[in-house]
Length: 53
Image (cartoon, rainbow, N blue to C red):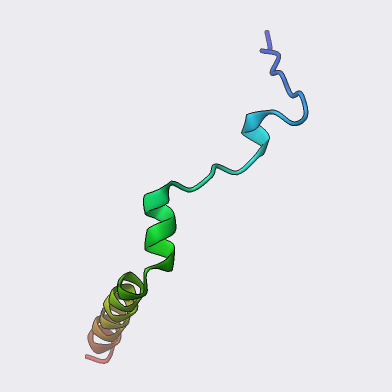
């Protein structure tokens, strides 16, 4: 027995979720972006240092 799924067009499930205010702030905050840039670069440097041994 198969379950019938309602696939009406233009339902809420068809659209991407709207980001919260905090998410929008984190995406546009200069200081957060600088922090993430440094953190990712440090991770890459650690990975490269381990691979060269």
